[in-house]
Length: 376
Length: 73
Image 1 (cartoon, rainbow over the protein chains, first blue to last red):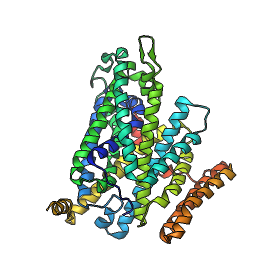
Image 2: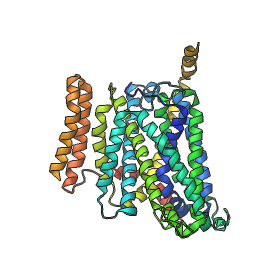
Image 3: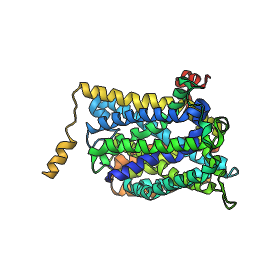
């Protein structure tokens, strides 16, 4: 097996939270308020339910094939060549996800902080660091994340507390009556696709030291992520109201700019930038690692390390050429990619695989027996 | 620009290839070369301002109706 690392359950939860939260908290309010207005928090709740179903689906599927990742078990289920095709689709998807995340990272740095610097500078720098961490393996960026994520979540909580004087919860009213159900459901699609990236659990489960806890990990990671997204949403809406929030790219950043306490505690943007860079690094590393590992497993290589740099080149080149501007990027992410992710990769294929596995009676020969054997 | 890019590719080959040859990991070397060739094919045209292909066009065409549904008030 190309990757030899093992991580424990807490590290896995942290990793799954980092995989979604750091880059989405900036976009979440404007993206949802645009559709569901002040009822967006209901959208996020709906999205959480969807993501929990996805998590259940993936954990269930993955536990039937212990020791095999998302790129290996389709072969067992569907036969060699159809399985290879499915795995190839997933490799393409992860290449796409990684390059979009990279582009998001670079675009944010350029448009929010340093408008005169070329995009490639930020992307190249973060990619070089990510390549180094990915070459060192799963355990390395998991441990980075173990240091980084508590800092991120801590600054999150502190920032929300500092912003409370600006908030007015009446801006969240009226609940539901004004809009009805359709906008709320439309608003739920995007957060569902974001939190639905929990499907990556199917790659991670073989590297857990307690694979039995896969359900618990997926569920707790989803709940932590969505509770932070909901609090960001409520904070932003109660500072600005839905109309204003919907008009910005980065409403959370503007919320942080509003912090103004006792004439000296202000200008907190660097904290947002720190969250973005630290969390972005971990997020890019996770997807980059999954892409490289997937390619290596698809080609049945002994080691994935030789592929790290070439795949990095592909990701960089794709992320630069895929979009003209941040407008194009956000429109594409917000209207096209979310359907592709949800329908095909997060629900469609896993559900198909699970149904076929159940029909063929592949109940899973494994984790329990193996672990029981070890203990006995 | 093109010189810098070539230098980057030479650096990548220099970092990875000798080790693979020494350990006789031919399968890995082949995969490495193919991926690097794809990377070069994507990167070099961009120096001259050409997009080799539109990666998002097929997906955009496929999910256009749903995007329209989302945009409708």
